[in-house]
Image (cartoon, rainbow, N blue to C red):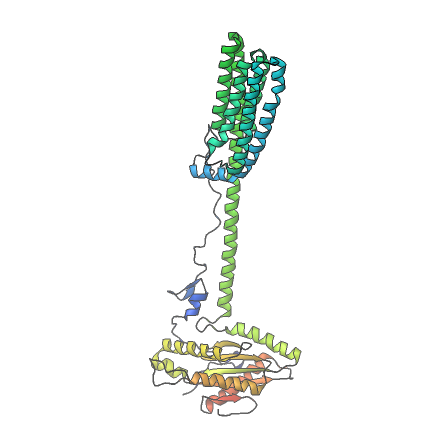
Length: 453
């Protein structure tokens, strides 16, 4: 049967391919994430829908009264994020507060002298100082800002109780104690980290407790009590709104940081997605979709590089063309799908029969081409004969039990001569034609004419 006109571009003959497209081999679907098996084409994605970077996330709404996130999960995430910082700042603030509170024992001695009140004040101050230091240690080791809010609130109530107890034990120093209450209230709001509702209740307890104690023990006039009340109201209002603003600003900063992290993560995913698409496109350009061998253009690039290297290093270079015998008869008799299966089987067999340094590609239709760097013609002939023998030993296919697969191979080579790849391909192609005309299932070397195996 006459050989199909499936030769090289330099001979002027148009390569032919199977007219019916069948399902590509498994390697395409397994190695190419973007391959669509149902349509037999490549999609531009990597197993997920391609989507642009999402728009900025919706600003989390904040409670107008507490400054906290309205979403419990968002608030919990925020508290977990700042937990380590809050624990450190709480330990430092409580240590300083305990030191200052204990230091004022000097003023106790000034106002009371050596008396029962002095001993009671010292005992109370020591208890408060020890409690604050112990709580600072516990919070530093086991505190949890998101789950153990009561633990962080406890020092405020202890300090507030200690300040209130000073009034009945030192009533004559009420004027200085008012200043201490104002300073302590502002410290509650701004210096000791805590949630706004916790601080507000503790400060309210301190203010009302101090005022009630002053009115009962110090017997102050109503106008003085009113002045103290107004001062404490102003102090709590200033502290409350200052902390409210601070809480909102911190949470807005956290939301913006989370948004930036989300966008950065999406950007990284998009970059990885685009890199995957580039890999897919490169694979499509470099691989023959049916056989998995190098495409014609990719083979030419690799072979030209190998030939140039051989010429620079003065080493031999060989090349041979492989043609499937009676391929048109296979297509006409058993159909193009069976012809595609034949090409896939022979391509895999040829590739396994070659050496690691050899390069094989599908040249068009039923033709394959192999480049053998650093290989003399006699060695190339041995490789070609091994390929021919391996193909001939393939078991008969179930659909065509009476047909044995064979190939004809034409070999060309160069050692010191300056030649280009198209010229070598032409030599191998002429040797291949000689083998086809000589009866097929042969290995023919371009400088030897026709030789049967």
